[in-house]
Image (cartoon, rainbow, N blue to C red; front, side, top):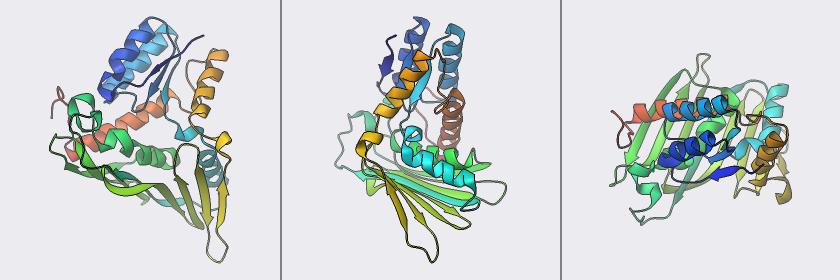
Length: 264
């Protein structure tokens, strides 16, 4: 069975996906799945009502580095997670303000384009936060060009997240545990690594052959689901997409980020 891949601007995802789902066409939709929780829940509900497959095309949980980090944390060998910091930034200024990245009507801005990666990382390893605070720096077009975020959890665990179109920070995530630190990094979708840092021990670094990673893993997962007549992926289930967009909505509300047509 063919699958429809949607890679239009964020603000058009729901419209395009609902059209396909109502025509009984399986959909693999690029992240962010939509611009707010209401739209994502519409898409998920439509997929379920029509008995059609839907998955958010978010490549990181399919990658061996993330799955190995998840295994290490789950094993308890580094103890409990106490703090996470994640970042994603680049600087290609001067920007063409007509581009999607800088256009609020198309869902532009750092948060939905790149900030959702470190947000996802924190949700993946810690779950939804109990409290969210955020501060955005806005471009002249009105989109968030930089954003700083703090998550707080009831047990005292915290996370710091940063994303920017004007700071060349690169991308990475550090997970500080009781007995050591996990460092996740990548230079592109296929070049990724995981470092384990513990006091008094040489840093352990794992990397993977490019053939083992990349976007093809999410495509393979989508095809596996279709072959097995599954309506959602176990790796990137609907519940994860809803959790992600729910958290992104909280961040936007806290930072004062709104798109045309939304009520502030």
